[in-house]
Structures are given as structure tokens and as C-alpha cells.
Image 1 (cartoon, rainbow, N blue to C red):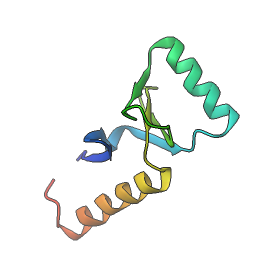
Image 2: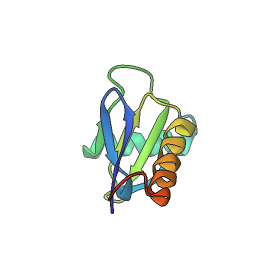
Image 3: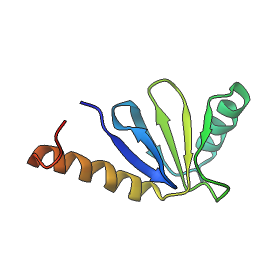
Image 4: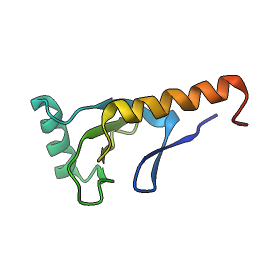
Length: 90
């Protein structure tokens, strides 16, 4: 069952749709974001702050977050840990 993780500032993403969480510093990621902006597939969840993580979804949407990729990954894995332990009812 899908769940949501907080990606900062009250924004959440469906965990079942996440393909990758990457740093925006590499040139290929910058090109990916630029192409997605041109095609209208970018969701900016940074609230005007610097982009620190780029989330790629199954539907080829690109989500920009002001949280570090490791923070998002930790939240993702903690959600899985809670699910496995039966703390979260799905």
C-alpha cells in the first residue's frame, strides 16, 4: 500500500511513485530538470528556497525539494521500518 512522505514545508509525495531521489548538482540532473521545465513536468516544492534534492517519479514528473536527498531517503526508509514493525496501519 502506498504512503506519503514529507518533502518539506507541508508537501508530501506518494512513496509508491518515487523512482529516484538525487542531488541537483550533476550536469545530467540539471539537464533533466531543464527539459522537464520546458515540458511542464516540474513540481517546485522548495517554497522559494534553494533546490537540494530532485525527486523523479514513475510518471516522469520531476519534484524539486529544499531538503537534502539523504533526509528524504531516511524518511522513506523510516516509513518502511514502521510499516514492517506494524506501527503504521496500511
